[in-house]
Length: 74
Image (cartoon, rainbow, N blue to C red):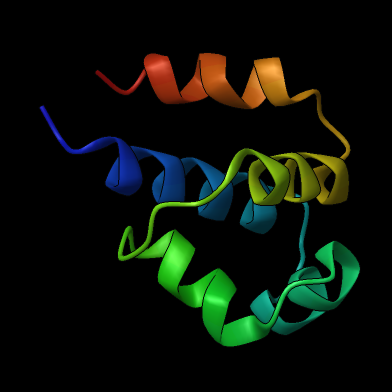
């Protein structure tokens, strides 16, 4: 099984791309630096609950739905 950081990053990236955001536009919308978004999507960092909520808000989906998608990657 992949580490949670990898699954989280893949899920965020897939949803971002599905919604048509560039990484830069998404980062701006989420209030997070673009290089940090890149690190998240690559699974290189562990995000805080606050940042996870910012990402979910920017994607306009409930955080619980984001976690459900992550769980489905197992």
